[in-house]
Image (cartoon, rainbow, N blue to C red; front, side):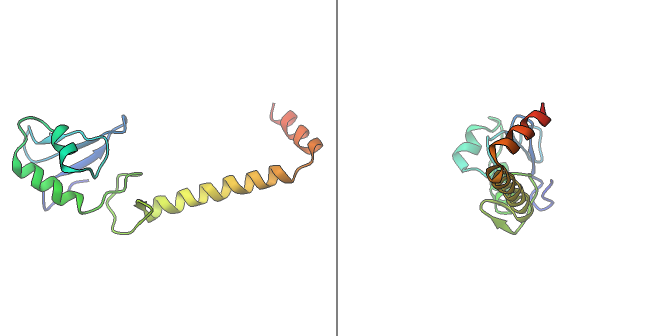
Length: 118
């Protein structure tokens, strides 16, 4: 996702770290989370990164990037975008329903289910 006003691109890497890239070849940082504080950004940035890069990255962070999916959004619930929050909520509800169902089974029914699963 490129912020057209600052030229900052924030991409979540498979390692879990973030790749923050600015306009120039030395304008980058790899913080463990995004958004992050200024010290972390500076510690994880190229030694040649300019002050403009840090100002632009700070401005980009205000746009709010979801820590779960990496998408920009304005509506956040519990630190993640509404879409991710709703997906997590549905996953939790499915888990709770499966647990409640398992708890309602008799020992014999549980044994039957275990045998069928193997």
